[in-house]
Length: 298
Image 1 (cartoon, helix red, strand yellow):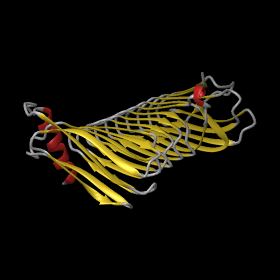
Image 2 (cartoon, rainbow, N blue to C red):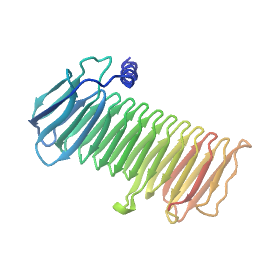
Image 3 (cartoon, helix red, strand yellow):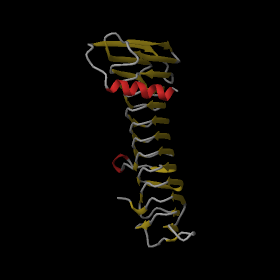
Image 4 (cartoon, rainbow, N blue to C red):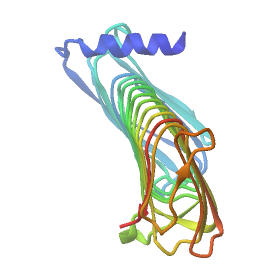
């Protein structure tokens, strides 16, 4: 029921007239360095930035007639935009400075979420908006229904999910799980920022393509899974890894080394079990009918 209501709000906002004047708002309050921040704004944008102060500073622009509720204490605070007409909400924009170590929760319908400079925990949710995170949060949970998710940095722990939106991760993580239904997934290391490797990763789609071009730890455990999406998996040529690859009705192409796939155990599809370099990491790839390509990372 909650998701149906949010879908209705998102659809209504698409056709909303934007005739109401905007009103500037500015609020502030004290918050402990590791306090909790909860922000809700249905339509528009939410930008959260971490800083080295024990306080929260909020600046925004709201349609005339909408209300901003903000309050709390040193351990936690909330900020909520209440539209004049919740069936036809107009865009509001919020820019919020919070302690870098804070625990931040943001929920929107079609508002875009942009977070940077947070080293604490992030929990972000949109229906049709976009989520973008930059930095090194300790934990990141990001969920979108029709929206895209973009992560740039080195979060320790990541869970990112979207239905039809794309998920892009530029960086590295010790523990990451990314999933979509029809959206694509792209994972890249960033050599210019010190690289970084993946230790544990689970990446899966139903029909969306998967593109992985990154380095992995020697003892890593990396799993890829799709029904019919294509998979393009690239790692450095000298990476030690043991591969177990199977496509029930699809093809496997290996340009990483000289090993070649064989026909699947049921007389169709392809399988490939091989060791690259000295082995060590475990890479498991499963596809029902999507093609799989293994190659050297660029």
